[in-house]
Image (tube, rainbow over the protein chains, first blue to last red):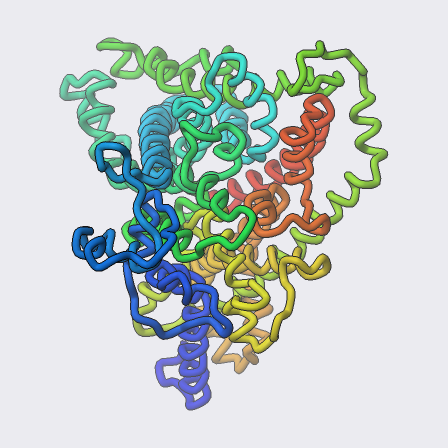
Length: 319
Length: 301
């Protein structure tokens, strides 16, 4: 650009900035609406017109975690005084928290599904990144016959539509008893993420100069020692970025989870939509569940911001 | 394939004399991954290839009968399947075009000095990182004819989005555009920032118009990366399942993945759905092939 900006250019820039701000607000509006709804009292979640200004409350989160039943009549003052603060919110809304014979609060299915998501996403990430890193090193440093074809094969497994793979996998899992188990999903997600991890890690390892390991080999390291003591620490950032990508993919996955699990191992993505059945759903509880579910990904996105381009292009485009 | 892996390596390499040989390490590092992917992707596909020639139904204990190419013949002659394919094609065109227009447009706007550019870019990228199924579900509330915020803001009264047979596919595409324009934007920004500044300076000296500059300098140089974004999004839109499945149950939004899912797991026509899966698979592999060629091309630059 010319050093001195013309008046038209400055005006153009201002218009562009305003446009960018408006677009950003539009893009964030649905996310804002999820967060806002998760702090609304139920009767304000589906008003005509939509309620934009309201006093936030955390009753949706209390409801999200507990089983409740409808109260026949208004709660008495004694009931209200006896209840802990979080239960009082539910009582005031005309519901009571279900307890078992010993007085323990009955949890809803949500924390269980959330835990399933965590178990499956973390385990499959560790497996995929572990295997992906060593395979990427193999491709990066050694001559492999038919390397291009093998790498294409590896990437092509990632492109398979989940429903296509799910048909035979469902039958195979049924035969070996892996349907609706954590391991069933973990292995599927590992396979899915493995190809991605190989491609991304190969890019990161290619960037580490070979001379580092060669120097170590001269110093008497074995190839294995050189790999673990030189390459792995050098690739730490890449490994972390790859891991976050794999985690997010596994965390968000829906189709396999829908087909392969129904109760015990069900993760949050198929569970959250299943709450919207017939009748009027309580959108505040769904929003609360959605908000907590999206939170880790939002945090990771910020941590990952400088690696997004690379991850999204399978390591092909670096900045 | 195994023989392809176990082959020559430079035997003179230094580490060959100490510890594990390089060949042993290479095989140890590569073969398990290849084997794992074969077990979890290729073997199942062979398994379903076998079933695609039978009338097997996973919901019964009846043994599978070999029916030859009947499933394929019937599927390819089934007008309903072609409807599903044309719905998918329409969805791909609407959704990918929207993503390219919005994504590339925003990238052009962002490609200048803007306060808090990093923060704004990251915020704009957020939608694509979120779960399609979970966020998609919430769009049901946004699209609601009476208490949805979209109709309220746009002043559309009680306009039906998702329960309107003609509109539902566009509604799904709009949500998809919201989620994935950021992807096109991200790649376009990378392409735009790689355009050498001196080209613009030269164009300015020649008093080239901004349209001329855009079509003769910007677009050709960004094109390869933009192509990657377009092919990748085409492939993903072709496979789309989550959003359309969650948002509506209109026959007009039954893309091919949903048809496949219903055939396999609701109607339990295992044999026939395996055949359909193969037809879809061949199409996907064709697109993947083009995609990888482009990836490698851009990589070489």
